[in-house]
Length: 253
Image (cartoon, rainbow, N blue to C red):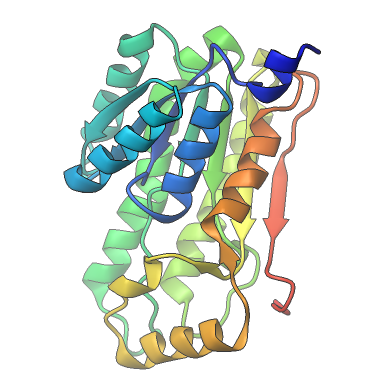
């Protein structure tokens, strides 16, 4: 392996990252760009995307800003086609967009359940479906961001856990459908991460509970999860990292 290929293992690749305006999505877009990929970045906040695009270009990489709300059923296919058309291919899709609206079942707001299902699960499924023809053509890679909550359903996180269990199940079924096409599928399940996810929680008890956990445990940083994603997508074609469970050292479950 040459020094250039070692430092830029994704040179010539095209990646699409959803939920790229902050947290894991932002850190992942930067990591992929620094590894040599051209990166299409997707989110609703245009100002955040512009700032990220400037950082990617400063790293010497190409980027495409796509301002979009993936909660709209027609949007995922449009986003995928914009990314694929820009560079004539699509090699890596990182489905990261999501919200975490924690509450007990008794106190849950039905609209918040619906929002999580539509964004955390359905938009991920729709983006993946739209991307499949491109990924099959180039033996690409799908990375779906789930959560420890997709393995352990804790009290106070029923709706969120339901969506993340769904992501894990969808990812495994997808893997078994497309492995023979050379398409790789990785599901990443982070534990507690320091991101903006908690800012959107409307239930006061749940918000206080999350703040308490963040004070008690040193959480992961978004860059820790991005490093795991980069590891998975940088493997040689014969290697498929199907699942990455990553917790803070101080987190029990």
